[in-house]
Image (tube, rainbow, N blue to C red; front, side, top):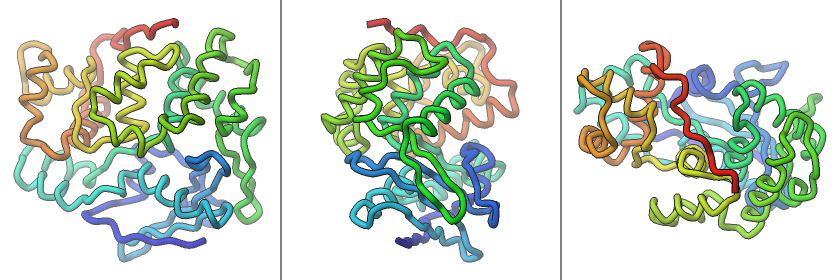
Length: 303
């Protein structure tokens, strides 16, 4: 099935893929990105082929069962932060010189999310104490071995395993046996339907973080990642060391600020504090050398 949307506010798909996505492309059209993922509801997996035409319109071809196509399309839009009205994002840059400069440099870049909180939680658990590349390779191998295959033209794409499949896996090459029960717990939470984008977004922020921390092995750091990068929130400010260091550098502060100070500095960015903070992260990591300490990620709980 085919869908299309004209983004509210400026949006550049190729720029987004350059900074964040790294999605697979089609051999016949390297400007078309392909997202492949389990569709929330977990009865099917989908491939969504996305292109942007000369007018700025995003055109999508969704390959899955027809009854799940609309949900898959909405999931793809959410992953690109296209399910929010972006006109206010443009306007914020006109009012705030710092954000305006960063928007100009990075073409009004918006955050990119995991396909679902379920995939985010699994990725964080799998990748704990591994490099980003190692975690990605393991997830790709899991998709090929256990995930649904979706055919796009003459090319096969593979989705991360659906929850009912993940909960039955007893060992994964490259993954510590200690992580397997944690992955099973994530699968169960997804099947219970609370570990979904709509369910988590419907909760107050602190309640959502508390609920996510009931998952085995998920502590403060990962719970924030699952909420902000899995469910996605346009107006929130993460409490982590990288954010604090980015604020220190951007606002030329003598010391690394505490979270309360960060919240005060970010307050004028409402209702796009998360989008602005992500933009600050991109600038900090790419232009300012990133975190000054390698051990900025706290250890997650073992339960």
